[in-house]
Length: 272
Ligand code: SF4
Ligand code: SF4
Ligand code: SF4
Image (cartoon, rainbow, N blue to C red; front, side):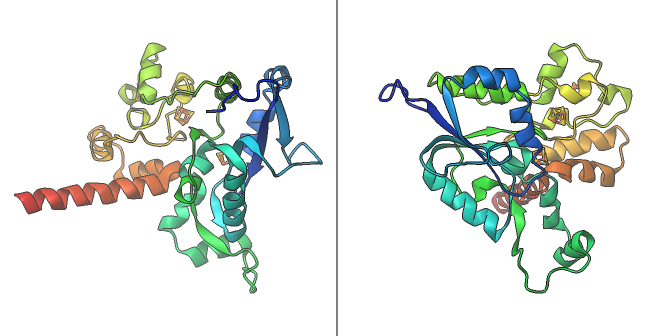
């Protein structure tokens, strides 16, 4: 939390930095225009390379990081920024969960490189790392997930930090907000939706427009993926499609859940 007591008169120094991603998260932040302008008497946007020519790399109070660690340069930048900021916020699905590029964990690395670059630079200038979210390397103080994250949520978090209040983590599934909105459940309409397994906080955006949730805010920590898979299979959805849907944004989380499941089965068998 940003402590306002010691330096009441000083504006909060905010930075926005980016590693591998599509820059959509930053756009969400800059598109909050009016709300951001209102906040500018409370914050100094000292680094925002996408929209500013002169950017500082020292003494951030709050640093938003967009993107996942996908190269040695990403890693070096991230480690350096962590040392320069009091609070580090993972902005978006790439930073929080690895997003689509984390599919590389279940794909052949060379095939991926060939598909993207045709001929990969022989000097390996890019020094790729198999993509991971930023918490695998540095401490993250808060997450604003989503692909892209919602403007409202970004503004809300910024406003709370300006007031010196710790933002609250949303820990209910997408279904919670979906039923509050009295949406007709897509699963009951024969449409595969991951809502029961996924972190809410997006006001059930996709199901409210009759699109299934595909998990851009990541799985809940206590999601039961096995029951989720079974539920979808029981409803007649294709098992391969279920896996593809679950790994679209969250391959790494999916693999971690699988390992956790296998371990607890083995422990159960050991006890029995
Ligand atoms: S989370 Fe989505 S919008 Fe943000 S950088 Fe990644 S791909 Fe782009
Ligand atoms: S539509 Fe999806 S998010 Fe909404 S209640 Fe049904 S399963 Fe949950
Ligand atoms: S409903 Fe699911 S996919 Fe859509 S914004 Fe919310 S978490 Fe992301």
